Image (cartoon, rainbow, N blue to C red; front, side, top):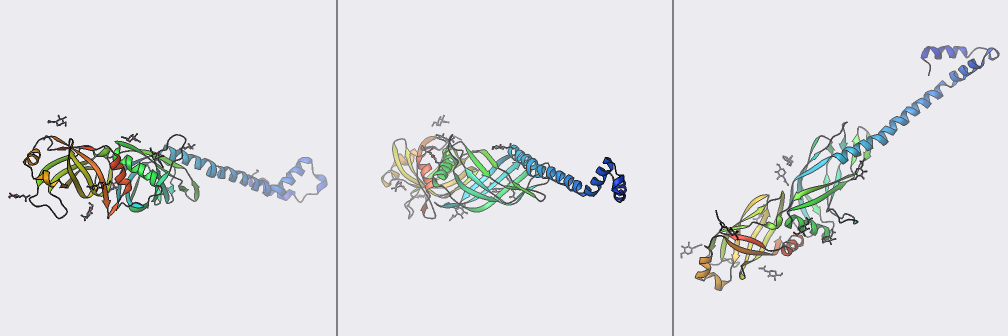
Length: 331
Ligand SMILES: *[C@@H]1O[C@H](CO)[C@@H](O)[C@H](O)[C@H]1NC(C)=O
Ligand SMILES: *[C@@H]1O[C@H](CO)[C@@H](O)[C@H](O)[C@H]1NC(C)=O
Ligand SMILES: *[C@@H]1O[C@H](CO)[C@@H](O)[C@H](O)[C@H]1NC(C)=O
Ligand SMILES: *[C@@H]1O[C@H](CO)[C@@H](O)[C@H](O)[C@H]1NC(C)=O
Ligand SMILES: *[C@@H]1O[C@H](CO)[C@@H](O)[C@H](O)[C@H]1NC(C)=O
Ligand SMILES: *[C@@H]1O[C@H](CO)[C@@H](O)[C@H](O)[C@H]1NC(C)=O
Ligand SMILES: *[C@@H]1O[C@H](CO)[C@@H](O)[C@H](O)[C@H]1NC(C)=O
Ligand SMILES: *[C@@H]1O[C@H](CO)[C@@H](O)[C@H](O)[C@H]1NC(C)=O
Ligand SMILES: *[C@@H]1O[C@H](CO)[C@@H](O)[C@H](O)[C@H]1NC(C)=O
């Protein structure tokens, strides 16, 4: 488009008599009358390009950086278990890169286990995440959120892997709204994270057995100190854990850990043993408790929290192979 000086000139021209005009002049006059149409046209073209960037390129760039981002789960605590819900806390760190200042609106993380080929993922729980400024390092911590179990079968599988596997893979997906200034759009977020599991509670150590002179009211007639290792970053509130105990082929009753919460690391617990009455009084039994490095077989029988059997804890523990604990481990 011509500059301002030209425009003023052509507008003055507009007053000239029509008969003296050449073709060029006619065209010039036409342009002069219609200049605003061209201006609007140009603005529309520029707008279309800008909108194309906003609604086409920016979301694509954003989706790319979401795809390139990583997430690491630093800790998950599952407490207050019941058969329909539980309380969850999660600390996680996401690494991302955004070329512009942007934030996620509040979003919902859906958790699933990576499905077998050709199958759809089944979400077993959802976790609401607050608004999140997109930064190179983002801390995503949630604490004490009461969460429903959305699918029992899928959640049991999750719990079984957490309890019994050395490692497990957790899928997280969401469809958050990204806000770049006043521009808003959604991106697909889908990540898997590999987490350490409790590995079947392998490595339980038993020490300091004490036969009670008088049984407690609940029938406990021996105490033992126990150390239950938890190599994962899961915290699991289990409740009262009951296990059947045997030494080789000889059953020696059952044992209870009351109000058990398994924290990451070594868990030192008091064990309430119920040894058959005729066995506990024998000299042989008392003597055998002093033998070093004795293998004791523990088979999970039940978990009870708040007077309720918690199926998703009890079943995987019962289904798992027995735990070989060591009584009087070598120092
Ligand atoms: C982002 O990853 C998803 C799969 O997770 C893929 O379908 C999509 O095409 C990717 N998008 C971009 C822009 O790379
Ligand atoms: C999250 O981090 C806080 C602060 O370090 C810690 O107190 C809390 O136990 C952690 N939660 C989980 C679930 O790991
Ligand atoms: C969030 O979790 C991390 C551990 O992943 C911890 O270091 C940090 O203190 C936690 N922040 C808050 C506010 O709890
Ligand atoms: C749970 O695991 C079993 C056995 O691996 C499998 O057959 C089933 O499809 C899984 N269920 C869900 C919902 O993932
Ligand atoms: C978990 O462990 C069980 C038995 O130890 C094994 O069969 C299964 O494949 C493992 N699952 C995963 C996802 O690693
Ligand atoms: C059991 O009784 C004996 C004495 O009869 C006493 O030395 C021992 O400390 C008692 N043990 C417990 C656990 O109370
Ligand atoms: C059970 O354990 C939890 C977590 O360790 C603790 O907060 C609670 O006070 C305990 N309850 C009883 C009755 O000991
Ligand atoms: C303890 O027993 C285990 C087998 O149960 C054996 O492998 C280990 O060598 C024993 N350790 C000592 C110090 O005797
Ligand atoms: C073990 O579980 C069975 C049912 O599976 C139950 O009848 C029995 O009483 C349990 N034993 C203990 C010690 O809780």
